[in-house]
Image 1 (spheres, rainbow, N blue to C red):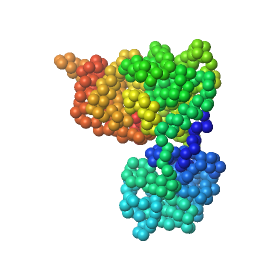
Image 2: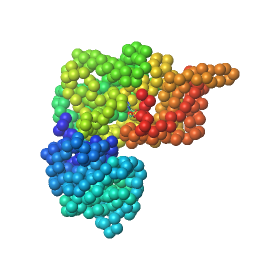
Image 3: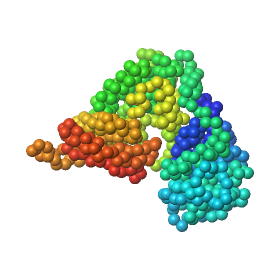
Image 4: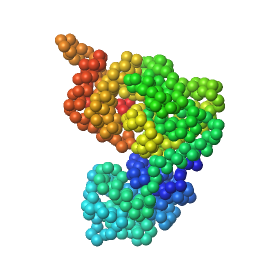
Length: 524
Ligand code: XMP
């Protein structure tokens, strides 16, 4: 499948020095309808050239250029002659490599800052921007002396904030223009990508679909067969529909009920994917074996592992059955997205494991299936756009992300059939009320969490002693960071009173007002 992964489009290469914002840079470039590729900062000049970039962006990163283990970088890149933009660590690297100097800042600068353009400085990068910019900073080093040949374009109160060398086509900014805390940052990136690099902005969904369908056909051939595990979510569904468009019913989809799906989801997904979209779908109800193995387990990572492993076993059995009944299967379709791909090639290996995510890779070696990952170059919003162009129902496309281990990571403590039922009911109320209020597509995720806490209540004249649940609603762009959403009080009141009166077994509802970081979106 490599053949279609780098379609013959103009591209911007982003070298990843390990910043948590690298993917955001890639997204911002894509939003300009320009293809972007993230490569580890260790990529050689030759590897970079393979992507025929029209410009290169050096990302931020946690290191200091003077660190003994500072990430390796092929500095021939700086002499390539095509436009380069350094961001944060990328800025310092340019300063350091080209003869300037960098020093530790008196204190780490993290948060909002103000940047002022130097009087009289002319810069294409800042075209159309005001003389004072609100920006987001996150760095421990400052540029002390800017390199020879560079002009200073902007300053903070303490240090240089932007420099350029028009002759060598190198620009560098100390702040993060890609984050929304730099309100005019998108315009700055647009100036770089469209004006300085001269991008056409012609990377569209329709083009992607045609190229992908053609590539899948060529890869799988006239007779080849593929299987796909559907989760009910957007990614696997769009991947399946794309591949189905290419090879029809030679794609068999498998949807597993793991016992921790949402209320009625097992049936709804079948209706949508089999009945509406015409996918060749096998639905397997394995809830008893998942719930059986989860009995007595309270540790979050343990739960995730059990669900991941059981899923693999169930899928393995189905794959063998398909192989026997329908013919040899060579290919496995997965809805892997670009963020997962980038994560797995990052500078110092994947960042610290906060949670083991269940959805990528993870199928047994013994299956010897070759992977088709038609979405491995896309971000979530791009996947939705493509699904829309493929005529998929909004109900699937707009569905909020749902974790692979399902409600199990929203049931704190032991996952029992009764607790699953309680949470399914509460979750259904949250989702339906948020939909009724017209907010479902405006928040990234909104859901209920069943707590391992019992509390005393009163209902009618009766004392109750029952479970507590939490409501969580967050805004996010990509799940990596998130802000809690202040849902309207009236809506919260309605959700709370419906849950307490309709879900027997829950007598208290609390509201989670934690952002990420420091919280995570899911509770486990
Ligand atoms: P956290 O809880 O890590 O979640 O802040 C970030 C986003 O990822 C989703 N999530 C998962 N998605 N498999 C998935 O496919 C998983 O194992 C998994 N765990 C968390 C979560 O819902 C949120 O959108």
